[in-house]
Image (cartoon, rainbow, N blue to C red; front, top):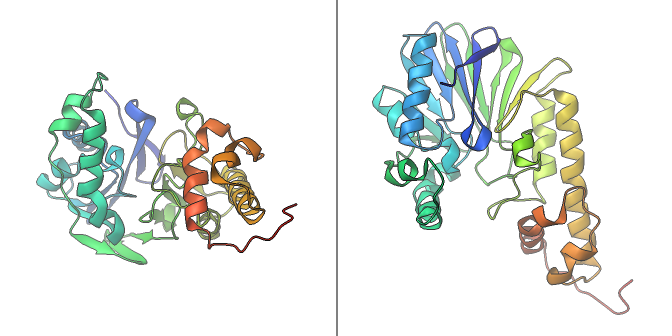
Length: 284
């Protein structure tokens, strides 16, 4: 059974094997906050059991770092245990439709865990915000910040200032099980992502520990490197589009920092997000 590991004063991380997803836990005098709730109700129960092995304190909140089901489908379990569900307003607004889409895709998937995913009740956070929010834990506060669009349009990071820890959600990914490629999915914003990571980095120092949505805890240098690569993706998309390269040729003609087979959604979404450019011949 997956257990929490303490990475700083009263800050823990549990790394679950399905999707290699991270769940965070922060404790204070007033209670505890869970950061992301895992990929199904059954896994949410595992999270709650692991939390209770750490502390019997009241559950103040369960925070969703973004909309995706592997971070949100344990919500109902944590809510029933007393946690207030918290998310960015865009993530909360999109959650039901997102899960419905995932379930349509998963109906014929034989993978273990899919039956639990299909049968899980969706609990939508009712406490939402647009830019920033502080959660009071008595002797410490958590800072929830929406740095901008990137992995989705509702990404947030959770900063624990006194412990110098930042939970990044899927704005940062480390997992080798997922090829360590950032999550350029069908709802990503590749042109905005570099600037969003710049804001995240402004909240960190050389000793900050950053917990990605998937994979091992990383440092500021790792995030700088991933931000640089995501910046290359954005600039490559901009260059190709500006030079008039058609979308259906961009994957082949671009010099990508990641395998081209992982870039299809990034390129499509980037082309959609760029303003139309007046193109004149000759295109060089």
